[in-house]
Image 1: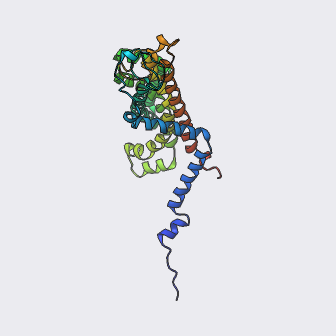
Image 2: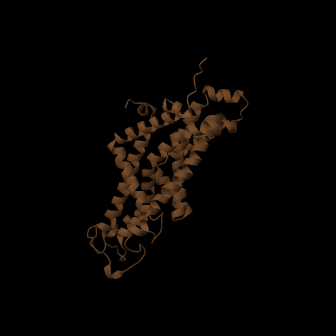
Length: 304
């Protein structure tokens, strides 16, 4: 009697097992990313920004806080690539170190607003009733005002400094995550697997953590990536108005504000930090569009 030998795990995986499926999904995502020139451009721009943030001490040619009145208001040249400001500080070094402050604002605001909005939206969508009513009305109240105006009000009330500016921006950006998380919770809680988990005795915290939050997070992450450009613009607006980072901190919005009185003759003082803001916002917007396309199920399962 002949017995057939079982196939090994490796041979099973090469004929359609989970590792092969995962590799296929990654390959499809890579092809989808490569087919979009805008996604590639956004990835490259943000990659360069991260490189500048990490290697700022090596890239900067001068101390960003060092003043030298002998070279004040110098135009861009060999000694000072982006020129100097009214105090003789090197603009290139200040723009480079300003990227660190911009990334700090993005990460902290995204973390605070993303976690807060996701938790509140999930609770509102899952429990409904009075909890949903209170959180929804609170969200509508925040959305009734322009985000920059509301952030200015919070920053002025808290006091002008970088920490309060980050808190003010976080207070006005959580609403978008909350609305997305609420919609996702309303959709997921009606699914059969959630009903089955409840029937097996799973309590609400377990259902929320195991089933609702993972689905909501994927949607919120894409939205946060798309909102990072708006976070940079809001932070730059607060810095321009003197409600953000205070001198001599090299923050891009504050640098644009410092150069507005010299814009006619010393154009580089405001133009080059403003260009850094524009490129960063463009990079995050393009990267967010690319991530959204990769996570879109219709695009992800498109034929190769």
